[in-house]
Amino acid sequence: MFDDPQSPSWTPLLEAAWKARANAHAAYSHFQVGAALLTASGDIVAGCNVENAAYPVTLCAERGALSAAVAAGLRPGGLVAAVVVTDVDLLTPPCGACRQALAEFAERLPVLLANRHGRELHRLEDLLPHSFTGRNFT
Ligand code: THU
Image (cartoon, protein in one colour):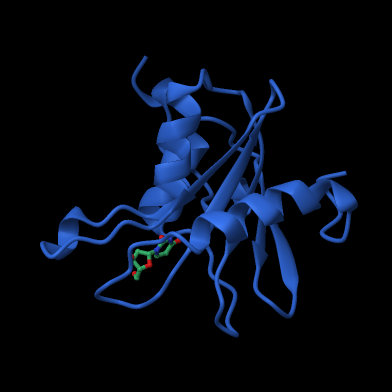
C-alpha cells in the first residue's frame, strides 16, 4: 500500500495533486506545487500554493490541503498519506513549517514526492525527527 512508492494506491492522490497544482497561484516564484492528502475516512483533499504580493503571506500547497482536510473533519491521527508534486527535476520535499503542521496529524505519515519522471517515498518522522508535539507541554 503506502509503504511502496510504486503502489497503485497512490494514483488517485497523484491525480488530485497534479490537478490542484494546475490551479496554483505562483505569480512571483512561478513554481507551482500541488499536494494531496488521504484521510482515514477515505477523503482525498488537495491543495496548491497560493502566493501573495506580500511574500510572507504565501501559503504552501501542503498547508492549504491540510486546512481543507481539517475543515472536512480531519483530526489528529487521521492522516493516512500525503503526496507533493512539482514539475522540476529535483523532487520537492515539504518545507519545515509544513512538516511541523503535518506532524500534528500523523507523525509517521508516508509522504510521496513526485515529478513527471519519478517518485520518492519518505516518512514524516524521517523528514522531521523530534518534532514538537502537544505531549511536550501537557
Ligand atoms: N512551496 C510549497 O507550496 N510547498 C513546499 O513544500 C515548498 C514551497 C511553495 C511556496 C511558494 O509559493 C513557492 O513554493 C516557492 O517557495
